[in-house]
Image (cartoon, rainbow, N blue to C red):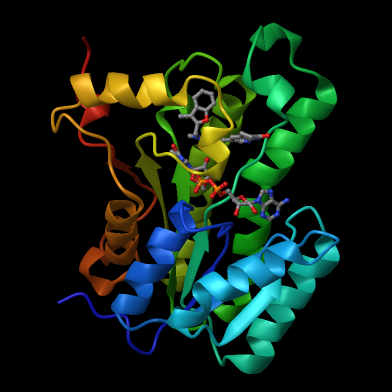
Length: 258
Ligand code: NAD
Ligand code: 0WE
Protein backbone atom coordinates (compact mmCIF):
# COMPACT_ATOMS: atom_id res chain seq x y z
CA UNK A 1 0.00 0.00 0.00
CA UNK A 2 1.02 3.55 -0.67
CA UNK A 3 1.89 5.00 2.71
CA UNK A 4 3.55 8.35 3.37
CA UNK A 5 2.97 8.60 7.12
CA UNK A 6 5.97 10.07 8.91
CA UNK A 7 7.09 11.81 5.71
CA UNK A 8 7.53 15.59 5.61
CA UNK A 9 6.60 17.02 2.22
CA UNK A 10 7.27 20.54 0.97
CA UNK A 11 4.87 21.43 -1.87
CA UNK A 12 5.44 24.48 -4.12
CA UNK A 13 3.18 25.86 -6.84
CA UNK A 14 -0.35 26.02 -5.40
CA UNK A 15 -2.11 29.12 -6.75
CA UNK A 16 -5.73 27.95 -6.71
CA UNK A 17 -7.99 24.87 -6.77
CA UNK A 18 -7.03 24.11 -10.37
CA UNK A 19 -3.27 23.99 -9.74
CA UNK A 20 -1.58 20.67 -10.42
CA UNK A 21 0.23 21.21 -7.09
CA UNK A 22 -3.17 21.26 -5.37
CA UNK A 23 -3.99 17.83 -6.86
CA UNK A 24 -0.61 16.58 -5.65
CA UNK A 25 -0.99 18.07 -2.15
CA UNK A 26 -4.39 16.39 -1.73
CA UNK A 27 -3.02 12.96 -2.69
CA UNK A 28 0.06 13.30 -0.46
CA UNK A 29 -2.24 14.28 2.43
CA UNK A 30 -4.50 11.30 1.70
CA UNK A 31 -1.43 9.02 1.87
CA UNK A 32 -0.63 10.42 5.32
CA UNK A 33 2.18 12.89 4.60
CA UNK A 34 2.82 15.92 6.80
CA UNK A 35 2.62 18.96 4.51
CA UNK A 36 4.49 22.23 4.17
CA UNK A 37 3.03 24.58 1.59
CA UNK A 38 4.83 27.48 -0.09
CA UNK A 39 3.11 30.16 -2.16
CA UNK A 40 4.18 33.05 -4.38
CA UNK A 41 3.53 36.18 -2.32
CA UNK A 42 2.10 39.34 -3.88
CA UNK A 43 2.35 42.79 -2.30
CA UNK A 44 -1.29 42.89 -1.23
CA UNK A 45 -1.22 39.51 0.53
CA UNK A 46 -4.14 38.23 -1.54
CA UNK A 47 -2.35 35.04 -2.58
CA UNK A 48 -1.51 34.27 1.04
CA UNK A 49 -5.17 34.55 2.09
CA UNK A 50 -6.51 32.60 -0.90
CA UNK A 51 -4.03 29.73 -0.70
CA UNK A 52 -4.26 29.55 3.12
CA UNK A 53 -8.05 29.12 2.87
CA UNK A 54 -7.72 26.47 0.18
CA UNK A 55 -5.13 24.32 1.96
CA UNK A 56 -6.65 24.63 5.46
CA UNK A 57 -8.37 21.18 5.26
CA UNK A 58 -4.97 19.55 4.65
CA UNK A 59 -3.72 21.00 7.97
CA UNK A 60 -0.24 21.96 6.73
CA UNK A 61 2.29 22.32 9.54
CA UNK A 62 4.22 24.92 7.53
CA UNK A 63 2.83 27.68 5.32
CA UNK A 64 5.53 29.93 3.87
CA UNK A 65 6.05 32.62 1.20
CA UNK A 66 8.62 31.55 -1.38
CA UNK A 67 9.26 33.46 -4.57
CA UNK A 68 11.96 31.38 -6.28
CA UNK A 69 13.51 34.54 -7.73
CA UNK A 70 14.21 35.70 -4.16
CA UNK A 71 17.29 34.05 -2.59
CA UNK A 72 16.35 35.35 0.89
CA UNK A 73 12.91 33.70 0.75
CA UNK A 74 14.39 30.38 -0.36
CA UNK A 75 16.97 30.54 2.43
CA UNK A 76 14.39 31.37 5.05
CA UNK A 77 11.99 28.66 3.77
CA UNK A 78 14.61 25.95 4.27
CA UNK A 79 15.78 27.44 7.59
CA UNK A 80 12.21 27.14 8.85
CA UNK A 81 12.01 23.55 7.55
CA UNK A 82 15.22 22.76 9.44
CA UNK A 83 13.91 24.35 12.67
CA UNK A 84 10.37 22.97 12.63
CA UNK A 85 10.91 19.55 11.07
CA UNK A 86 13.80 17.28 11.92
CA UNK A 87 14.20 16.23 8.32
CA UNK A 88 12.72 16.79 4.89
CA UNK A 89 11.63 13.72 2.89
CA UNK A 90 9.71 14.99 -0.11
CA UNK A 91 9.96 18.06 -2.34
CA UNK A 92 7.38 18.90 -5.01
CA UNK A 93 8.53 21.45 -7.59
CA UNK A 94 5.41 22.49 -9.50
CA UNK A 95 5.98 25.96 -10.90
CA UNK A 96 6.87 27.65 -14.14
CA UNK A 97 6.65 31.09 -15.66
CA UNK A 98 7.43 32.80 -18.93
CA UNK A 99 6.33 36.22 -20.11
CA UNK A 100 3.13 35.97 -22.16
CA UNK A 101 4.96 37.76 -25.02
CA UNK A 102 7.25 34.76 -25.31
CA UNK A 103 4.43 32.17 -25.54
CA UNK A 104 3.28 33.12 -29.02
CA UNK A 105 4.75 34.36 -32.25
CA UNK A 106 8.22 33.71 -33.62
CA UNK A 107 10.50 31.72 -31.31
CA UNK A 108 13.49 33.44 -32.97
CA UNK A 109 12.26 36.75 -31.52
CA UNK A 110 12.56 35.58 -27.90
CA UNK A 111 14.24 38.39 -25.93
CA UNK A 112 17.28 37.84 -23.72
CA UNK A 113 15.32 38.98 -20.67
CA UNK A 114 12.36 36.73 -21.56
CA UNK A 115 14.72 33.77 -21.94
CA UNK A 116 16.42 34.55 -18.63
CA UNK A 117 13.13 34.93 -16.74
CA UNK A 118 11.67 31.68 -18.11
CA UNK A 119 14.78 29.63 -17.34
CA UNK A 120 15.38 31.29 -13.97
CA UNK A 121 11.87 30.60 -12.63
CA UNK A 122 11.10 27.35 -14.46
CA UNK A 123 14.49 25.59 -14.57
CA UNK A 124 17.10 27.08 -12.25
CA UNK A 125 14.60 26.99 -9.35
CA UNK A 126 14.66 23.17 -9.35
CA UNK A 127 18.45 23.15 -9.06
CA UNK A 128 18.37 25.72 -6.26
CA UNK A 129 15.55 24.04 -4.29
CA UNK A 130 17.20 20.62 -4.65
CA UNK A 131 20.50 22.08 -3.42
CA UNK A 132 18.78 23.57 -0.39
CA UNK A 133 16.83 20.36 0.30
CA UNK A 134 19.88 18.06 0.02
CA UNK A 135 21.34 18.68 3.51
CA UNK A 136 17.87 18.30 5.08
CA UNK A 137 17.09 14.97 3.39
CA UNK A 138 19.12 13.03 5.94
CA UNK A 139 17.03 9.82 5.65
CA UNK A 140 16.94 9.85 1.85
CA UNK A 141 14.18 11.52 -0.07
CA UNK A 142 12.22 12.04 -3.25
CA UNK A 143 12.08 15.16 -5.43
CA UNK A 144 9.37 15.43 -8.09
CA UNK A 145 9.03 18.15 -10.72
CA UNK A 146 6.47 18.81 -13.46
CA UNK A 147 7.37 18.95 -17.11
CA UNK A 148 5.61 18.94 -20.49
CA UNK A 149 6.05 17.26 -23.89
CA UNK A 150 6.89 20.70 -25.33
CA UNK A 151 10.37 20.23 -23.83
CA UNK A 152 11.00 17.22 -26.09
CA UNK A 153 8.92 17.88 -29.24
CA UNK A 154 7.82 21.14 -30.80
CA UNK A 155 4.41 22.27 -29.54
CA UNK A 156 3.30 25.47 -31.33
CA UNK A 157 3.69 28.58 -29.13
CA UNK A 158 5.25 26.74 -26.17
CA UNK A 159 8.46 28.36 -27.46
CA UNK A 160 10.85 29.45 -24.68
CA UNK A 161 9.05 27.21 -22.17
CA UNK A 162 10.15 24.26 -24.32
CA UNK A 163 13.76 25.25 -23.77
CA UNK A 164 13.08 25.65 -20.05
CA UNK A 165 11.51 22.17 -19.83
CA UNK A 166 14.33 20.56 -21.84
CA UNK A 167 16.76 22.06 -19.32
CA UNK A 168 14.53 20.96 -16.47
CA UNK A 169 14.46 17.33 -17.67
CA UNK A 170 18.24 17.28 -18.04
CA UNK A 171 18.57 18.87 -14.59
CA UNK A 172 16.52 15.94 -13.23
CA UNK A 173 19.18 13.55 -14.59
CA UNK A 174 22.17 15.49 -13.25
CA UNK A 175 20.49 15.92 -9.86
CA UNK A 176 19.55 12.21 -9.74
CA UNK A 177 23.18 11.25 -10.41
CA UNK A 178 24.48 13.59 -7.69
CA UNK A 179 21.89 12.83 -5.02
CA UNK A 180 21.48 9.10 -5.62
CA UNK A 181 24.33 8.07 -3.27
CA UNK A 182 22.39 9.84 -0.48
CA UNK A 183 19.28 7.81 -1.46
CA UNK A 184 17.54 10.92 -2.76
CA UNK A 185 15.60 10.17 -5.93
CA UNK A 186 14.74 12.84 -8.51
CA UNK A 187 12.05 12.34 -11.14
CA UNK A 188 9.75 14.36 -13.39
CA UNK A 189 6.12 13.85 -14.33
CA UNK A 190 5.29 14.92 -17.88
CA UNK A 191 1.62 15.82 -17.65
CA UNK A 192 -0.75 16.17 -20.57
CA UNK A 193 -2.50 19.54 -20.98
CA UNK A 194 -4.81 20.45 -18.09
CA UNK A 195 -6.86 23.64 -17.65
CA UNK A 196 -5.12 25.58 -14.88
CA UNK A 197 -4.42 29.26 -14.15
CA UNK A 198 -1.21 29.07 -16.19
CA UNK A 199 -2.61 27.12 -19.14
CA UNK A 200 -5.90 29.06 -19.33
CA UNK A 201 -3.92 32.22 -20.00
CA UNK A 202 -2.62 30.53 -23.15
CA UNK A 203 -4.57 31.16 -26.36
CA UNK A 204 -5.97 27.98 -27.88
CA UNK A 205 -5.54 25.73 -24.85
CA UNK A 206 -9.11 24.41 -25.26
CA UNK A 207 -8.37 23.44 -28.87
CA UNK A 208 -5.22 21.64 -27.68
CA UNK A 209 -7.19 19.75 -25.06
CA UNK A 210 -9.80 18.84 -27.69
CA UNK A 211 -7.01 17.56 -29.97
CA UNK A 212 -5.57 15.38 -27.19
CA UNK A 213 -9.05 13.97 -26.51
CA UNK A 214 -9.17 12.68 -30.10
CA UNK A 215 -5.62 11.32 -30.38
CA UNK A 216 -4.63 10.03 -26.92
CA UNK A 217 -5.13 6.25 -26.49
CA UNK A 218 -7.42 6.89 -23.52
CA UNK A 219 -9.38 9.46 -25.62
CA UNK A 220 -9.34 12.02 -22.82
CA UNK A 221 -7.02 14.34 -20.93
CA UNK A 222 -5.76 13.72 -17.40
CA UNK A 223 -6.80 15.34 -14.13
CA UNK A 224 -4.80 17.06 -11.41
CA UNK A 225 -5.67 14.14 -9.09
CA UNK A 226 -4.26 11.59 -11.56
CA UNK A 227 -1.02 13.57 -11.66
CA UNK A 228 -1.23 13.68 -7.85
CA UNK A 229 -1.46 9.89 -7.67
CA UNK A 230 1.62 9.50 -9.87
CA UNK A 231 3.46 12.01 -7.66
CA UNK A 232 2.43 10.07 -4.53
CA UNK A 233 3.82 6.92 -6.17
CA UNK A 234 7.13 8.65 -6.99
CA UNK A 235 7.25 9.91 -3.38
CA UNK A 236 6.60 6.49 -1.88
CA UNK A 237 8.76 3.42 -1.36
CA UNK A 238 6.76 1.74 -4.15
CA UNK A 239 9.09 3.59 -6.54
CA UNK A 240 12.29 2.96 -4.56
CA UNK A 241 14.17 1.75 -7.65
CA UNK A 242 13.24 4.67 -9.90
CA UNK A 243 15.33 7.83 -10.30
CA UNK A 244 16.25 10.25 -13.06
CA UNK A 245 13.12 9.39 -15.04
CA UNK A 246 10.37 11.27 -16.83
CA UNK A 247 7.02 9.57 -16.23
CA UNK A 248 4.34 10.48 -18.75
CA UNK A 249 0.91 11.02 -17.20
CA UNK A 250 -0.82 12.05 -20.41
CA UNK A 251 -3.46 9.43 -21.26
CA UNK A 252 -0.84 7.91 -23.60
CA UNK A 253 -0.60 10.87 -25.99
CA UNK A 254 3.22 10.79 -26.13
CA UNK A 255 3.43 7.36 -27.83
CA UNK A 256 1.44 8.42 -30.88
CA UNK A 257 3.22 9.23 -34.14
CA UNK A 258 0.08 10.08 -36.11
P1 NAD B 1 -0.55 27.06 -11.94
O1 NAD B 1 -0.65 28.44 -12.48
O2 NAD B 1 -1.63 26.60 -11.07
O3 NAD B 1 0.83 26.85 -11.20
C1 NAD B 1 1.99 27.56 -11.52
C2 NAD B 1 2.58 28.02 -10.20
O4 NAD B 1 3.83 28.65 -10.38
C3 NAD B 1 1.67 29.02 -9.46
O5 NAD B 1 1.34 28.50 -8.19
C4 NAD B 1 2.57 30.23 -9.33
O6 NAD B 1 2.36 30.94 -8.11
C5 NAD B 1 3.94 29.59 -9.36
N1 NAD B 1 5.02 30.54 -9.64
C6 NAD B 1 5.19 31.31 -10.74
N2 NAD B 1 6.28 32.09 -10.58
C7 NAD B 1 6.80 31.80 -9.35
C8 NAD B 1 7.92 32.28 -8.60
N3 NAD B 1 8.72 33.25 -9.09
N4 NAD B 1 8.15 31.75 -7.38
C9 NAD B 1 7.34 30.79 -6.88
N5 NAD B 1 6.27 30.31 -7.52
C10 NAD B 1 6.00 30.80 -8.76
O7 NAD B 1 -0.38 26.13 -13.24
P2 NAD B 1 -0.06 24.57 -13.39
O8 NAD B 1 -0.52 24.24 -14.75
O9 NAD B 1 -0.57 23.80 -12.24
O10 NAD B 1 1.55 24.54 -13.40
C11 NAD B 1 2.32 23.77 -12.50
C12 NAD B 1 3.45 23.05 -13.23
O11 NAD B 1 2.90 22.06 -14.09
C13 NAD B 1 4.34 23.93 -14.10
O12 NAD B 1 5.68 23.48 -14.00
C14 NAD B 1 3.83 23.63 -15.49
O13 NAD B 1 4.82 23.85 -16.47
C15 NAD B 1 3.53 22.15 -15.34
N6 NAD B 1 2.66 21.56 -16.36
C16 NAD B 1 1.42 22.09 -16.60
C17 NAD B 1 0.60 21.49 -17.56
C18 NAD B 1 -0.76 22.04 -17.87
O14 NAD B 1 -1.30 21.79 -18.93
N7 NAD B 1 -1.40 22.79 -16.97
C19 NAD B 1 1.05 20.36 -18.26
C20 NAD B 1 2.32 19.85 -17.98
C21 NAD B 1 3.12 20.46 -17.03
O1 0WE C 1 3.84 24.65 -18.71
C1 0WE C 1 2.75 25.06 -19.04
C2 0WE C 1 2.30 26.45 -18.70
C3 0WE C 1 3.46 27.39 -18.75
C4 0WE C 1 3.18 28.85 -18.61
C5 0WE C 1 1.98 29.46 -18.91
C6 0WE C 1 1.87 30.86 -18.78
C7 0WE C 1 0.62 31.59 -19.15
C8 0WE C 1 0.50 32.92 -18.45
C9 0WE C 1 4.24 29.63 -18.21
N1 0WE C 1 4.14 30.96 -18.08
C10 0WE C 1 2.99 31.58 -18.35
N2 0WE C 1 2.93 32.94 -18.24
C11 0WE C 1 1.79 33.65 -18.34
O2 0WE C 1 1.79 34.90 -18.28
N3 0WE C 1 1.91 24.20 -19.73
C12 0WE C 1 2.39 22.90 -20.09
C13 0WE C 1 0.57 24.58 -20.20
C14 0WE C 1 0.72 25.07 -21.60
O3 0WE C 1 1.22 26.30 -21.84
C15 0WE C 1 1.30 26.44 -23.21
C16 0WE C 1 0.85 25.27 -23.83
C17 0WE C 1 0.49 24.38 -22.79
C18 0WE C 1 -0.02 23.00 -22.96
C19 0WE C 1 1.75 27.53 -23.97
C20 0WE C 1 1.72 27.43 -25.35
C21 0WE C 1 1.30 26.28 -25.98
C22 0WE C 1 0.84 25.18 -25.22
